[in-house]
Image 1 (tube, rainbow, N blue to C red):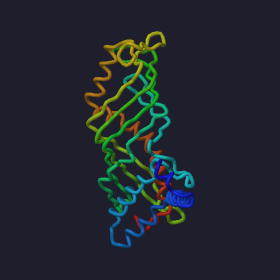
Image 2 (image 1 turned 60 degrees about the vertical axis):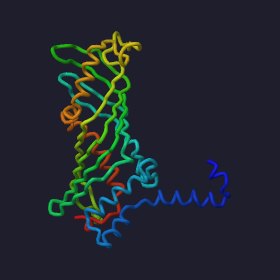
Image 3 (image 1 turned 90 degrees about the horizontal axis):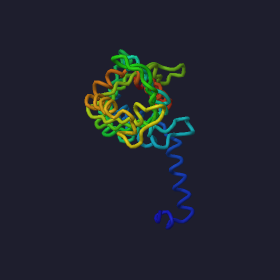
Length: 259
């Protein structure tokens, strides 16, 4: 704060103007084209463009209707667990700003782009709900409350099918996201309440400590298997959000420069 106090008003004005212009003029097509002209190659140049996304992930670009992606917001994820339903609402995923772009591979014949990302650390929060029946035939009282998850070295494989718009710009026709992680810790508060109420003095406010610990142990001890089991549901909800983000950011890239 003391640095800004020592700046005269004119200098501060130009600093703010510079920051505003930098963010509002975010256009990856310009450095991408320049990279190609320098002989950087399609794969390497796309990798550099994706890495440049980090500069606007927290702020987004309102002028382009590009929302912040740190954290990434997903309204609703739902999947079945035996005969029970698990919902995660208003989910926020953090860790994208520190992403490492491991590789970017374009297949011009198949018109595909596969990108491998690593998030050194990822965290998520949501409001969850669990209801239905679980083996051997246990009817669950509806559980709901805050949910948290932390993971290390989370790998994402983003698969995209590409095409061209009527104006000749790159068009991401569809996207699929596969998640792989070995280390995850999840917590669900107020799992298995009693008469609609949590038990604040017990483990994670659950009224059935033994059952709650069993569920958490099953999820956290083999998080990789848990994620793979529900991969389709997770991808179907996360992919459209990422697709919209990437499509907007790459809106000016010529399709002929990629495929």
